[in-house]
Amino acid sequence: MTNLVETIGITEVPANLGRLLENQLKKWKGGSHHPRGIAEYITNSDDSYRRLDKFIDQNIYVEIHSRRGKMIDKLIIKDYAEGMSFDDLENRFFRYFESFSGREKGEKVTRQFGTGGKAYAIMNFRKCWIISIQNNRECKAWFEWDYENKRIIKGYNNGGYKDKPTQEKNSTILILENSYKVNQPLEDLVKHIEKLARIRHVLKQQNVFVTLNRKGKNKKIELEYKQPLETDAKRIWRYKLPNNLFNSNEDSDLVLRYFGKPLNGDDFIDLTDGISSVADLHVTKFDNRPFANSFNGSLLLTKLLDSSAVRENRKGLEEDDDLTIDIEEFIKVCVKESINEVEEEQRQIDKERKLDAANKKLKELSKFLSKKDLKFRSELKELRKRFQNIEEDDGNFDERNDDSPFVSDIYRKPIPEDNEEELIKGKWVDRKGENGGGESDGVQEFVPDDDGEEFAVKVKNNKSKKTVSKKQKQGLIVLMSNDEDNPESIKFTEFDDPVSDRDLETKGIIWINSVHPITSRAIEKKDKNPALFDENISNLVLMIVAQYYAQKENEMLPEDEKDDNQTLMLFRKYFFDLQREIREDKEISYFEGDK
Image (cartoon, rainbow, N blue to C red):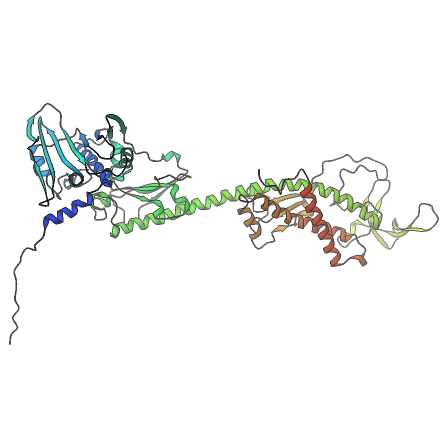
């Protein structure tokens, strides 16, 4: 048995066009839509000038009248462009969802002719009028939303007319009366209009004047686009468009500008299609690091002309459109690269600033250590007298401000580091006491003799009295490593010791390793707690100094008195003595912090 399949011809799908239309129009209903709706009519006026090839310095007028401030009693928007004839009103203005703007013919206008504006008008005002003058003929029509029958209606009666003779020049005037509500103070509403990307291109080229008439008092405002000046930018980047965004007939870059301070709402990229602004793409959308709000930029893409990536009424980009995804990926990469460079530059600036502040503070510590070093030299001199009864100068402890005369040659016993040419033959003998009684006073002195079997090194060679002139003593110096401003600064790594005495004896320098975790953390937190930073760094320095003093004193002890415990005790003694003295020194302010 053969199965029969029933075929049905083409039929119309039933649709409630009134309901569908109402749903579209409701998108414009509500007090928060006033700025965007007024902007729609401003761009319509600009488009009218553009069709006359008047792209700059034309006037558009907006009047907002309000007796109470919470409602708009009358909104008037006026231009002196091409105007409209009766046929234009019937066949262009009162047609919906069809393009009659001229863009379909290649005109450099922004959008379809007036659809969004009329939707705003009929959804938010009780009476809507359009007056148009062209070639000495004036027409006036009303239009509104018929809530009962779900349709837009119009008429030229009840105060309207068509083709009335006039001597006025061509113009278009929109009059909207008795708004339902306004969600913001009128001054804020005007500021909101000024900020909209929708009319930015208009404000850059044409003159838009707003008059606020509240309770009979007029306030005139000229709308302006006040973009951050490029001359104020600290850095500017220009990124070439990738192939998927590039049109062969354009030469456009993504321009990013860094201003070094938050831009308070102007931290966006102005995306345009070559005719008007399409969207404000806030930089923080692509990178939320702190520096993002100090960036501003611009990007022209002719690929956006008549693209599905642009939302209805040019309210931004469609999120899931392929072109939108390509644009946002490109911007994200460029923004990240620019912010990386700014962060690295700022890290270097912060590092230099902190190193400079640290070195400045450590100079004060150096003054104290210089005084302490002089005191220690005197103590060490006395210590040496106890065990060798000589005034030894080993090259590292030169008492340059000592004016004592020397009356004879002075020798010391050689050490392994001495060169052979410095050694003098002779023999060491017990020195007799002052009474000449023949008993030794426990101190040996050296007698040069070419045939001698013992050796010595000459320390002083002053046969006659002389006075040594006083010279300025250079004390210890404390410096930060890895300092780019100091060409002699040592380069340490984070794995080296936090403090180094490598140049202590040769140059009198103690180096602080600025990249060691201990010191780098202290430097990072210096601004929050400078006193703690000073004490941490000072203690590191004092440890080296105390260790140095302890080793020097230990070297002078007899062999039978030397041991590790003795060195540790000397270190503790010097460290705590130094710490106490630096706290008590009135000329030092390390532990008081910045005031």
